[in-house]
Length: 91
Image (cartoon, rainbow, N blue to C red; front, side, top):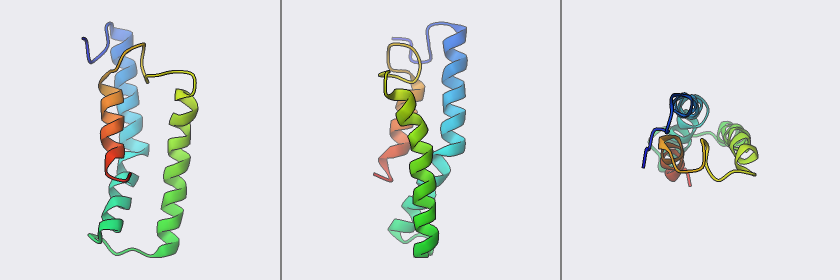
């Protein structure tokens, strides 16, 4: 199994998805988790707004994955595994 994609185009797509996850999902995931666990102070209004942004960002992934099983190609790649890993702590 080639976890990084079978060809250069797929490898580039995997990198793009990892970048998108790092920019739009991971920071909010960490921030929300830290607030819930009490590692950082939390204010209910700001927390609710961050949850709304998090849901909106995940909506893009939901829309993309509606007709697909994987982010890149027809088998699991590093992008899929990373996405699931980032979502474990907030859920």
